[in-house]
Length: 142
Length: 154
Image 1 (tube, each protein chain N blue to C red):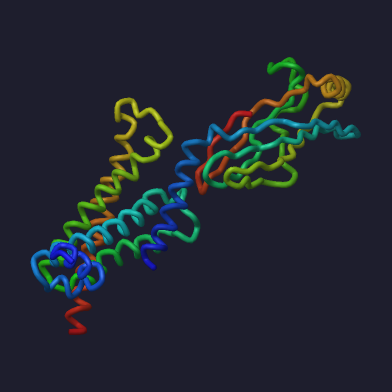
Image 2 (tube, one colour):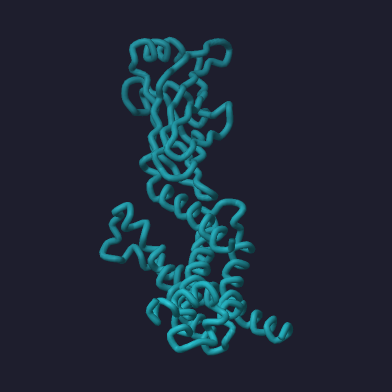
């Protein structure tokens, strides 16, 4: 009984440690962009998170920006530091995938350019996601 | 059945009786109980060392209690004093070996470069700290508690 409890705790912790060392293998990719106009225009990005590690991870966007074509200050479509996950943190099981929805504000003057970028397929996401395993957190590049 | 095999079977099934038996039985009992207690203590101490990655139900109190229990098991399973002391020594050595093996294992499994072992030095420091100030003292304390229990219930 004692051995079983100890072994169960050991295996769970060892899996989490392996996952921690492998966290850079977590893949985060944008699959869909949607422009929502109105008084406070926003871009909604649907992102797929794949977790090939041996433990469940919790992800949330920490610094994500949508760009037009390439990553530079001149091509920023969304306002920096406005990206958020309206559905909260998402837990991705070991070896599984999950979808995370990210919403970011855009300035009124950028609506047309953003629509054109999405239409032409030039919109791209770059930044970092916060990845948490157990009580440890780290940033993973998008 | 050979004498060696008979000693191992006796030690595995009735370690308390084996601890009072022939020299072979005493050695077998000390080895089996020592390895068992060492593995139990090393696994629980590993979880203690990596608490930030441990599941919520494996808190530090529960894991420390398991290490303590591994020390108690040594005396409760090997009742004869000298055999139990040998088993405690085996538990300490096996526990230390497993602790270092568990610390190195992720780097070997994932083929992570350790810069000739340099990257492992902080990990080894943690392992030694938890051995010296956690695993061994807790196991010895558990062993002493079991001696007191034995004396009180004799």
